Length: 307
Image 1 (cartoon, helix red, strand yellow):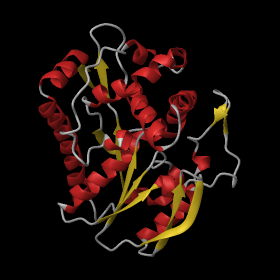
Image 2 (cartoon, one colour):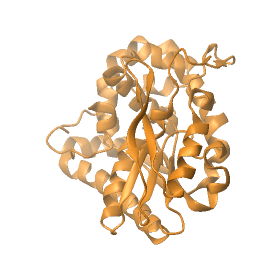
Image 3 (spheres, helix red, strand yellow):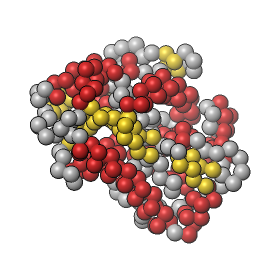
């Protein structure tokens, strides 16, 4: 795990925002390039690339960046988002997270994993599949939306929180390589508790949910303990399948997200404490703002969360 000093983050943000952002983005891209090179070397034996990671790890953008990096190695890739295999609201009974008293939206039972497993077997056999599309606004799965077939020299990139679940792969595990994405960084303030990786991911999710999913911070907080429970139950047991890893944290993002969420974090101090996120409230007013708009790349992973 990489540790970043808050004092250094603030100094970089205040004195040379352009160079700070460039350095953060370059470190992230170098990791993506290294993973793409490894995938390319084994692409004939392992045409299935499973991209896994907890909530707000940047799976969508990193998958796209891998797609582009693989093209530089002469490897054509297709992509599948596991989000499109969510089941429509009303078509099943959402499991209950009894520990937290909320719907268990992290459960694999919310997804049609058997369908995805069958689709992967067909793809590897060279047959065409019809990929569904999930509409988050209506919480509805639209079946057979997109035709997809793998050519002999292609790979397929599959991203989602259940990408390493054995229900998907079955006996195809020997044809797959796992890529594990996470925020594998912590931030150390001058005083007080440090910000752990899951706290940094919460900032991403809270801003994304409010901007793109119609979910206010209060609702994201109510669900957060269940999100963390889901990670322990459904992601952590299979993490070892990820032989390739990427730390998607961009240190400059703290300057953007903390300041964007400042007022809402202040209104929810008690809820933050209940969700194990009290250090975020303690950090209010201590993170320098950053002039990022002229410098952040169009393909930055951060756009998943700030638009």
